[in-house]
Length: 409
Image (cartoon, rainbow, N blue to C red):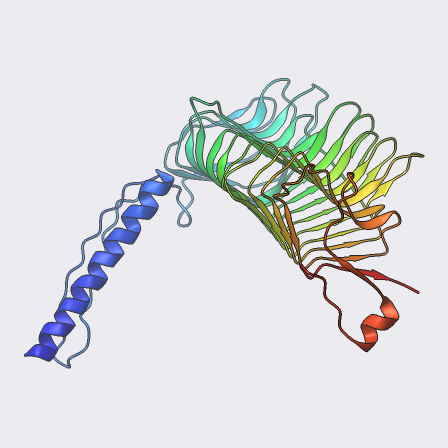
């Protein structure tokens, strides 16, 4: 009897935990209503009982039948309005949009999945600021996936809300944003996931170019994305532009060979707070022709954690200008741990001043940066030990904070 009672108690606890977990996730995203009904009991063989889960989830449809098919019949010179709430929309052929306003597809209602099904939407006109896919302010639960947006004079994907009408719970997955003015522009987002996407060869004649831009947002994760060969003919270029965000993540992303005439950075983080994380990212060969170039540039930010990331061969071509692997500018309470900076002008640079330093550098490695591996402008050195490569082969050396500068003899 006691054994049977204990099993029943454990089963009840498991059911309550399931309901609690779903409700917590539901409240956090604010995207759906979920009801759970569990029934069943102990089987005759003494094992746990079966159960039935009933859900009235109202978020984006992740799979299933296609509700609406679109083609060149729908997208030609007129914007297709994706206002079919709760529908899966699928592109059935490559199309060219030649409209003179708006975007090729405009998502105006919630609960929409747009699957390009491996196909391409191209802009064939010359009007400025035409976007590939637009998500309107206040829309919730949208997924865009599996295709290419190219040639648009605005952004490939343009999801811009307002402070009073945020866009909630969006997913961008397996997308190529190519030869547009910008890749992804996301502003005032609450919960978002940008995954396994590429911003390649986006460019403008004058102004600022970005591969992926997220600003004024909370709980946005960029995972497994690449920004490469984006360029500003006259202006700044940023692979990943991350500004005024809280509780965000940039994970396993690559920013390489992006080029601007003025300030250029693989990863630009500004005015952020609230425990943002950059993990396992790479910034290589980002180039500025007239000003400084940065692998990771952190401006006026607090509570940022950068770990296990690399910054190599970033280039400032103008005389008297420098490149930086990791640069902290007017930032505080930032931790850099386990990162590597090679072959820049400066490896790790922190302009935090005064006697109370809040930024922490731990277990980083810097090699062959032409000016210095670790630096603060006020003469207070970051804690590190310098060794030559031959010695490193023979033994092991650590500094008070395990930062190492490796130099060839």
